[in-house]
Image 1 (cartoon, rainbow, N blue to C red):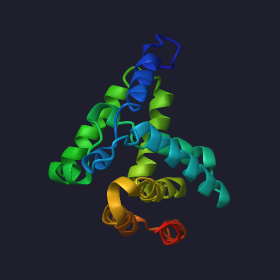
Image 2: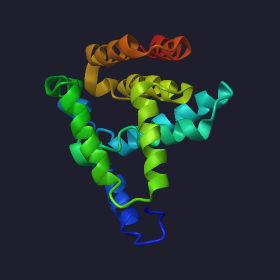
Image 3: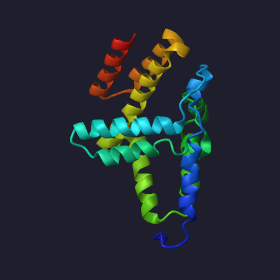
Image 4: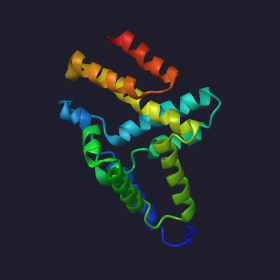
Length: 188
């Protein structure tokens, strides 16, 4: 059993994965011509802060929500940022396999308790198996819609509407959905 008392190489490997996310640009923005597109790390930080705030406002665990949000795209340090079309073309089973291999690589050598906590956080996100995980899933889309508003000069109205429409089609939480609608109503 790896209890973390051995080599700390796993911490350096985890740092390398996290640090790489600072330079992985969000592909959806890049493909639409956004010159200084946010990185995956930028996105994850925004999702973490918003998720923690919404979780706290509902009496849920803001720390748990923030952890889920920080980790929700960590596999992209290995896979890169895949667009929804790329994920769909892989198929759900292959995508899960690729993501499982990526998280195993990221967590290689980590203590068992670290692996357990990280993997549970990722399951909470993927499966919506906790209230915090469900918040993060919706806030992930909220952040995308809000970011589209920041890029409206480069995207144009139709580009913003594409991302907002996508977000609204996936957000299940009525309060988070209304945040998108309110932001769009006041910005456009």
